[in-house]
Amino acid sequence: MIPLSYYLVLSAILFSCGVTGFLVKRNIITIFMSIELMLNGVNLSFVAFAVKWQALSGQVFVFFVMVVAAAEAAVGLAIIIALFRTRETLNIDQVNLLKL
Amino acid sequence: MLHLILFLVFAAVCVGGAVNLLLQTHPINSALSLVVVMGALAVEYLLLGAEFVAAVQVIVYAGAIMVLFVFVIMLLNAGEEEHTQGSRVAWLLGLPAMLAITVIICGAVLLHSDDKVSLGALPGPPEKIAQLLFHEFLLPFEVTSILVLIAIMGAVVLAARPESTPEANKEAR
Image 1: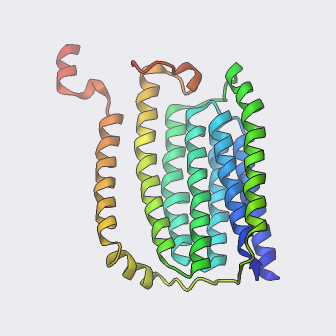
Image 2: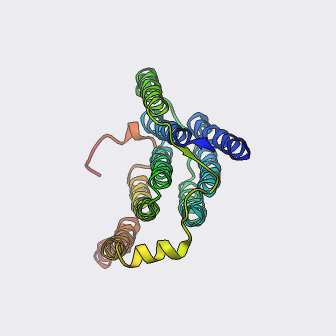
């Protein structure tokens, strides 16, 4: 028996690591990975609360979050490829115009 | 006791991987530490009894999504991260703010929750989840299939080379 809050604390730490990476990283692919890390932290708290309420719908929502994450990864990486083709850089400090 | 030890070991692996993701400068190292985080998270799901989520975590996240990331990193030949003035400001302001928020959330969670979970507490066999997914959540499930279809088409359109369209070919000639 361990407290449920341990899982929530782990989830909060993972989420904050994701936000920190989103803020401090300058490589667009690493920023994208930080977003995945945030989604993972949220998934853990979904499952933890599913255990607390003994409800399976929490796991179904994790499934939906994963579907959205997969779709987001596919589209986002396609955007990164398109960006690299026109700008020849992955550093977001050099990507400061909406115009291609 | 066993539950606590397993939880702590894999939580340490998780947090270590997440911190390593932040500290590494090369994207491929960050991607590999993210795989470690996802694998350790799958074990945490198993400890809670969520076998379906653990399996999907390994197959979809650690498998499919991370392969996509590593593929793009290698395709674009991504190099070391370059640091500029902006990143130093982000370190100075963002890190203390995030630490403060983490401490506040952790404090609130630890103070106001006295629920306990045992090993494999969630009775969630995949059959029950399938029942739920294809009966109560049928409409959201179908909507996600449309979402995935749109995402596939969007990815193909975005990543297609502009020169490969017929008009562009004519212009090039």
